[in-house]
Image (cartoon, rainbow, N blue to C red; front, side, top):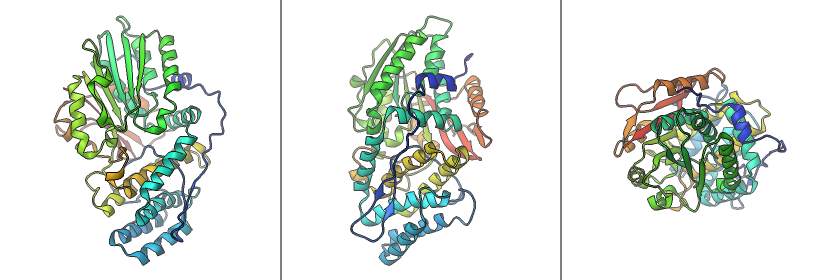
Amino acid sequence: MDITLFCPKDTLTHFFPSHQQSNDQVAAIDMQSNSSNNNNNQPQTSHTSTSRSSDSGEACGGGNKWASKLLSECARAISEKDSSKIHHLLWMLNELASPYGDCDQKLASYFLQALFCKATESGQRCFKTLTTVAEKSHSFDSARKLILKFQEVSPWTTFGHVASNGAILEALDGESKLHIIDISNTLCTQWPTLLEALATRNDETPRLKLTVVVTASIVRSVMKEIGQRMEKFARLMGVPFEFKVISVLNHIGELTKEGLGVQEDEAVAINCIGALRRVEVDERSSVIQLFRSLNPRVVTIVEEEADFTSSRYDFVKCFEECLRYYTLYFEMLEESFVPTSNERLMLERECSRNIVRVLACDEETGGGECERRERGVHWSERLREAFSPVGFSDDVVDDVKALLKRYKAGWALVLPQGDHESGIYLTWKEEPVVWASAWKP
């Protein structure tokens, strides 16, 4: 592969030009209950997150880690239905928590909301409120600024883009009609560098159809402008291009082969970044079989390394994994951004909806959206029912390593150990946080 596949800043800036206003601040929301004295001031949305193989709260800036201890104690009290202890611990956490404080205070603030919702059985109402507020404040401009800054300071998302683009380009090499089915909700930030790579192919430039499947309602409002910018960028690169958005679905399980418009003469690639975790657990096998029925040349899967699935019926165990996961994510944000960064605050607030969704909403009333992450080894077991793993080539691995050199120390690439493992891992301070893999029928 003779072209670097990670997204250079000038490419993304061309796709997302930065002439807009700079004050993209998101106001905090007071989630208050009239049925209890236990108020908690909590913000917004939902986004990326993470993983850690040590005990809950082992990160986040040292100290005595009071947040982890109090939060875990409160989770156990909720599980045991100890109302007096719940009331006392929620009150303590509310006094100590702050979304603007240190890492412990922030963790306490965001998890307090989920614990309060769990204790008062108000999770679904809170989740819908957070979703509605996030949608109202979401715009292309704010999303552009947030994405560019996050990709500038962290390889959290670009790691999967580089690995997936490399696998897709190699699998579709030499084909004249390409069809990429993108199920990711990543606002198409992955594709400018792939278009550049197609434009510089030695043979005739292929025709590319990009079908973007959008399931997150917050993303739907900006897809029209993103599509226009993608079409403009493809013209600039000289790549024949067709852009299609499928946004009427509640979840991926509703996809059909007919709806995707796959043609017999197209070489198909399916790209899933953070998408499979949104599929209800009982529907995952059928979705994978749907992918198989499309006869793709390659399927790329990127997921964050955490397990909210095996423990979904054990509240305390699920809570501890969730706390571990977000503790590492918040630590990464703390070390990647300056303390006064608005983008960092927005990313932290985006976690609140996910935390409430995982810890305080019943599976039966999820409204078609799910946040049940699984670890790479578990995804591999599911995918092997329909596909075979494809190892990343040396060229792709070299591209990923080149990407990581652009960032602060602490990031590393880990290759699979033994035949039982598939894919590659992004690690943060030796803890796996993102898993990327490629598969073929």
